[in-house]
Length: 171
Image 1 (cartoon, one colour):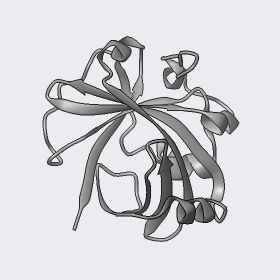
Image 2 (cartoon, rainbow, N blue to C red; image 1 turned 45 degrees about the horizontal axis):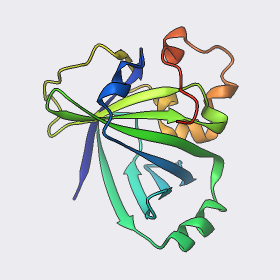
Image 3 (cartoon, rainbow, N blue to C red; image 1 turned 180 degrees about the vertical axis):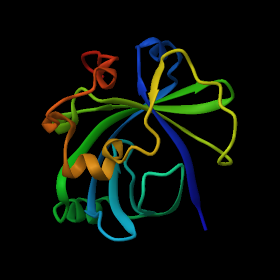
């Protein structure tokens, strides 16, 4: 059984860009966000697709089950989604012995930039880079399932810390 243990932060500056080693374009949709689990389908520009089931709750540690599926089937599932399509470019940023992922959201969530770091254990110490801002772990509105139902661009008031880093054209 797999568990995802991660911390999430808003991004405060673009200094991470000099450290990025890879990027991937992601489209994902939520088939269910009710009850005890969320069900997500994801397609990447690298040609893969997955179906994921995650325990609900915006916590540091969550059950995560992920299965590869054919892209054609993933496209069909996306049509069954609840809410908006989540579109983002994920950048891989090694820092302090960890792999950080910086997500630049597009479309309905444009303007939002989030950094995540996956941990081996819940209380693992992390060297937090200077380009990382406010921690948002445990704040449900920043999780992708919530963003699909209530996109960032529809928020009546956007916390100023949420827009600290600006996307660069073409990214």
